[in-house]
Amino acid sequence: MKNISITAAFLLIWTFSFSQNICKRKVSTFSPSSTSYTISGSATLTDSLGALYLSFSSTFSTNSGPDLYIYLSIRNQAPTVAGNTNIEVAKLSSFSGAQTYVVPSGVKIGDYDFVTIHCKRFNSFWDGGPLGTQSCINIASYDTISKTACLRYLSPSKKYTWTKSGAYMDTLRRANARGGDSILSINLTVKAVDNGIVKNNQTLMATDSTARYQWIECATQKPIVGDTNRSFTSTKNGFYAVVVTKNGCSDTSKCESITFGASTSNITDTSCHRYRSPSGKYVWDTSGIYTDTIQNGAASGSDSIISIMLTIKTVDTAIAYANLVMSSSAQNAAFEWYDCDLKTLVPNSTRNTFVPNKVGNFAAVISQNGCVDTTTCYEVKSITNDTTFTDSMCFSYTSPSGRLEWTTSGTYNDTIKGGNIAGGDSILTINVIIHTIDTGSVDSNGTIIAKSASGSVFFHWYDCDNDSLVPNEFGRRYTPKISGNYAVILLDNDCVDTSKCHRIIISKDTTNSVIATEVKFSGIEVFPNPTSGIVYINLEQIQEESLITVINISGEVVSSQKSQEGQNAVINLGEVRGLYFIQVESQSAKKTFKVINR
Image (cartoon, rainbow, N blue to C red; front, side, top):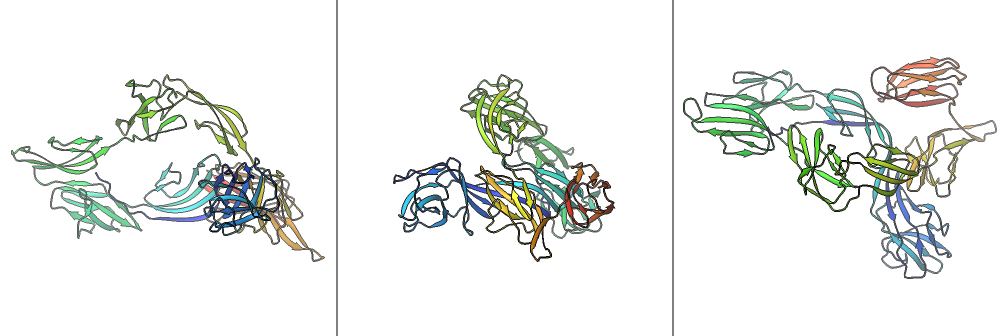
C-alpha cells in the first residue's frame, strides 16, 4: 500500500559538547608575477573556532625586500590599485620557511580570493596566488545529547533504530582521515502510541480508549470527514485505518478490509518490481490500493470486483566507481558481479565491492527483499590490478579496503579480496605520510608551556570554561590572569589538535603578589574505561580523605562516597548505559574523569 504519513516530534537538548569545525582554502601555487619577484610554495587559510589563520608551507620562499606585507584581496593586484578591496594581514616575518599569521578579526574565510605580498616602502607588488575552494572537516570528541522522539529514533550514524526509551551509545566515524570519531551518549525518550484496532463485521474500533482518532480510507489516504470517534462503521467495500494521536505523537494502524456481498472481495498481494492485475488488464509498479474487475467472475454470473492492497518490492540498483573500486549501496543484499561485454558472471565476486582488472563494462546482479535485479552497465575506462600511490593524513590513515588503520608513516600494502575478474586479489601499495602534533603541555608556577617546539607550529590559547579563544594569545607560553581551565590549540601541516585543559587558580600570598597554581591529582587511575558497570579507582598516592561523586549526563548525582587516605574505591555504575562523570575531590584538589558504561 502507499505510505501513510506519520506525525513525529523530536526534542533535542545538548548537555555537553566540544568539537572543532575546521574549514580551509589553499593556495596551491602562486601566479607568475609581471615583475621580477616570485613566490614559491603554498599557503593555507584556516578557519578554526571562529578565528582565521594564514599559514605558509615549509617550501615557501620569496625575494627579500624591505617592508614586505601580506594581504588578502579580491584581485591578484597591489593593494593600492583602485577597486582592489583588501585587508592587511601582517608584516612578513621571514622570506622563507613555514610561518603562520592571525588574520584580523571580522574577516571571513570566503571574503577574499587571493593571498598577495606587497612592498610598502616602494609601493611594489611582489606576487600573489588564488585561494581554492573551501573544504571543511570536523575534529570531534565526546558529545552527550538528550532526545525525545515519537515511536522510534534513528541514530545519528543511521546504523541503529531504537523503539524504547533508554541510554544508548553511537559512534560517528570521521568524514575523512583528518577528523576523529565522535562518540555520542544519547539519553533517549521514546513516546509510544497504541495503534491497534479490532474488527467486528463492518465495524472497526481502536484499542486505546483515551486518545484522539481520525479514520482514513487507505486507497486515497484521505481522512473520512466526521469520523473522529473511537469506533467506525463502514457503509461500503474497502480498506480502512485509524490515525491515533496521543501525547503529541501520531501513528497509523494497519489497513483492515471490509466487504459487502458475494460479488466483491479484498485481497492483499506482494510482487517484485511490477504486478499484473487478476483480469490481466493492468500492470502496476508502485505500492497502493487498486480496483480490478473480472467480467462474469462471480458465482451468479455477474462481474466480480476485486480490491487489491498491493506492495511492490524493489531493489537498490545504484552503483558507484571510485579509487579503482565499484561498489553497491544496497543493504541486506546478496551480490554477483557481471561482465556486460562477455555476458557472464564474474567468478568469486559476491561482495558489495568489486575491482575490475581490465577496461570494459560491468554491472551487479543484486538480490534484495526477496527480489533480483541487475544494475545498468558501468563503463570502466582505465584500471590496474595493482597500484602504488602516496597519501598524507593527520594522525591516522584508513586503508582503501577499510580493514587496516596506520598511525605511523611508512610504506604499506592493502589487499581488496576477490577484486579482479579472475577472482584474484587487488594489491595496493601506499606510501603513507602521517602528520602528528605534540599536544603535551606542562605548568610551571602558573605559566602553561606547550611542549611542541617545532618552528612551523602555530599556537592559540583556549578558555575551556567559556568555550572560547583567548584574545591575542599566540605564544608557546601562557600565564592566565584569572582562575579557570585553559588549553592550547596547535596548527601544523594543515593538522589541528588541542591539548588537555589545565586548571589554574589565582590566589594572593602574604606579600600580596599573585601566585598561580594548577589544581591537580597525580597518580589517580580510573579503570576499565569503557566499562560494563564496575569501575576501580586507584587512590593509593592520595594522602588525604577524598569524596567521590558520580554524576550522569543529565547532571544528576548518582552516588557519593568517601575514601580514606590511600584507600582505593570501587564504583558500580549499574546497568544504565551512557556517559558518566566521576569527580574525586579533597580539601586541596579536585579532578573529574569521563567514563563510558556500555
